[in-house]
Image (cartoon, rainbow, N blue to C red; front, side, top):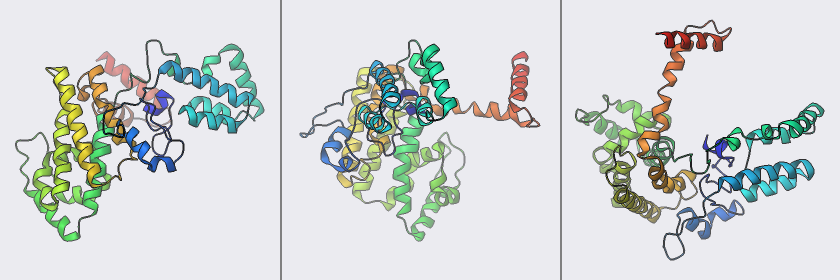
Length: 331
């Protein structure tokens, strides 16, 4: 979602994987070199913090318009080359460019260029008072729980033998949740379906790690998880008394986590969500505690939509949902 709002590539295998800063690599091969790793971690060759230049929203808007001009007046090859150089990708504009060889689409493009030029681009570009680079905060559900924590849980559980998995199920079964805000655990499901878990289930592993995971770990793995669990207490903080102290501690524990994990293996360096985690402190400074702008909070409203669409004959579901919402409003 952030990529579509900010006109940046999907981060997976992109050469410009960050929608907040200008982290980039000239080629996929270059992403395996030390220079990229330093930029990925916001460090210089001596280990000092050196942050990448942030993206500027006005620059993104200008580059988007220039890319459209290149695509319509030059060649698609030139457009693709410049798009990779800028790290800019407008999904709406891209659809027009892909189909500009069709006569009807070409006529529509010319009509919009003459009368409603901005309709050719992402509508967020013309949203007054909105800065796509600053106003799309790091989201802890997808970046932290479904990113960093998920990767580490998958990697750890995947390396256990069947006998160890049975023991893990036993440890989860015996874990007392009475003092925690979580329901009774389902050990068989958590272990067998570890690749299909959702955010709240990865939070269980995060909270219970010292009791259920540490017995299977060596010293280096424990240090990684200790630093991760400590970092999580800051990431999910709901009240901040002193922002400056909080920022200092959050950045310190983030750096400690990266030090612990990269000392063991560098396999995670090309995972964009690890890099985006470095921007969490900036998002919290701008918007407050991360739990207040978490997608998880707003996804709970999906239940309202499901309720409104349940009693529908599916002939005109939009109308049925609108009527149901009108009834809710009347009540």
